[in-house]
Length: 428
Image 1 (tube, rainbow, N blue to C red):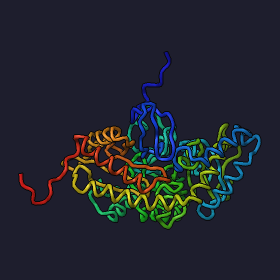
Image 2 (image 1 turned 180 degrees about the vertical axis):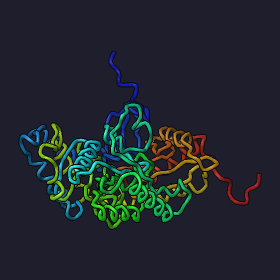
Image 3 (image 1 turned 180 degrees about the horizontal axis):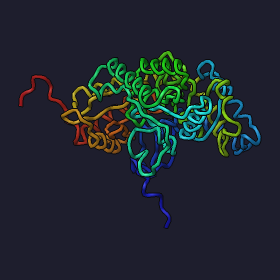
Image 4 (image 1 turned 90 degrees about the vertical axis):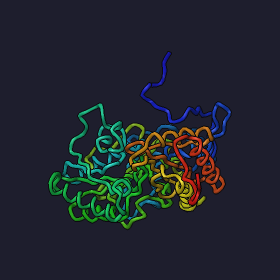
């Protein structure tokens, strides 16, 4: 009998029968509140009627129109709609299937445009599982180990992880920028450095928002040295953070922007965007792909962007994110095992620690598993696996946030790993 690869590890035992909005209905007859969104993919919720209708209509016209052979109208329409939300000056787009592919296309573009070999990434970043993308990834050894040699020309610089260092944010930013300057002076000369690549909020690395001052420091150095600044918006983009792009909490504009995940509500689609003058520096034949810009995926993406705009989902992510974070901080206030609550919009993380303030992956895993019994689906992340991430769909309602917080509180209480502080003045 053929089985799935044993290397695949399931975060929950749920087998899906169907799903709608914020809910998954299992073959076990249970209804689960899905605060995973397929790892931030189902931006408009499960099976949004407009996305379903657009995909169904397109599938009846043409499913596969290979875009270097014939052009199709959903691709052209999507390009126009992306132009309405992309940062100013980013007027050229190349489509692929996955985040990893888009990352690889971005670093290829940067190397071709600059004629330089090196890429600088940052501690805790996740950029994908393909060889080049994994070479840039330091969100955990499981992503980059066991298949060496990985791609050369990659150097890793510290991320301003204030909680880990025990510093305030500005101190962490100053430290990380000084370490980057040291790297440029001692390891990868600016004349050899093609690009910086960073997420505006770390994903698998622990749901850490990148401080605006750090992004601005990167922009300053990139401009000064002629280095390409690549923003990996695969997870943070398309409204997830409460702004359309995660980097918009800062004043910067990237040279290359990468998008995927929430762009097409679950259909495989990714893209890189850049100014036309930069994109023209790609070598002839270097961009292509059999399935990139698939017609059905593009139709779904067009509908997704329409829904995000017309239903006010970016603003909903901001408001519901504030509600979610406030509730999580309330729960953390009496539970020292939760060392930090942080995030932007509907991209929230809770970092679990032991009595010495060290990473506590066992507690994070216990809570994530206990939540399943409360019919709440969550995921863990972090370089040590000690962060629980909370990622509702952008359509999530006030009532669904409260339902999720109630279920999460029950999971904390039932996990056996999260003691509660006694009220001040309590006696034994």
